[in-house]
Image (cartoon, rainbow, N blue to C red; front, top):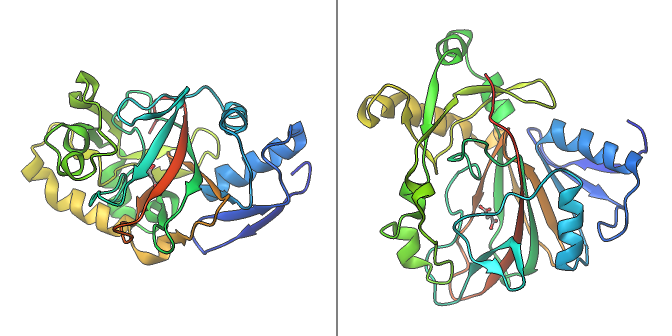
Length: 281
Ligand code: SIN
C-alpha cells in the first residue's frame, strides 16, 4: 500500500472504517490508491464525520468512475446524478428493505454505490452488508462446481413496477417505471471480481428471479438456498449511521439491506452510483 491510511476492519467478513480522510478535500493519488485497495478487498468502507456538499460527494465518486444515474429514484433537486433514498414519516415501506445488489438488472451493473447520510431517524435505520466473497468461499467443492457454469436472470420489474408493494407503500420514492425495469438480463452465478481477482457469488434477493433456461419454480429451491446462505450472520456487518457518515460499497461482491424500523420518522440519504462493467465468470 502506498500512502498509509487509518483503516480499521469492523467485522470478520467485510467492512472497514477509514479514519482521518476528509472526502471534501482534494485527495492525492496515493491516498486514493490506499482507499481503493481497502475497498476492493473488504467490500464496503465507512467514512465518519464528513461534511459534504452534493458537488463534493460527486467529485469523490468520480474518482472511481463515471456516474450511473439511477432510473427509478427521485433525484436531488438540481443534481440529476444524485438519487434520494428517502422515507417520510407517513411511508411504511423504505427503499432497499431486503437483501439486494444495486443495478444487477442492468447489462453493465453499477460497480459501487456511495450513500451519504443527510437526515437520520433518532434511532434505527441501520444498513446490513453481506460479503459475497465469504458466501462463495464457504460453499462445498461440489456446489462450487455445479454453479461454475450457471447463469441467473436479473430484473427490476418485481421491485420497481408501479404495482410493486414498495411503490405503493413508499409514496415519497415514487419509482419511475420505465421499460428498462421490465427487461431481463443474464449474469454468471459465480463471478470473478475484475479488481481483486477473487471469486464471489452474484445472486441477490431483490433482482435475481431464476436461473437461465429454467422456470422460477424450478429455480426456487437452489436460489432460495443460495440467498439464505449468503445472508448467514457471519458473512454480514450491521452499520449504524451517524450524522456525516458515508458508506461506499462494492456492488459486485456485496449485498445490502436497509432496515425499516423507524416508522413515523424521516430518513434522507443521498446516493451516487458508479458505473461498472458486465461481470465475468
Ligand atoms: C440502498 O439500497 O441503496 C439504500 C440503503 C440504505 O438506505 O441504507
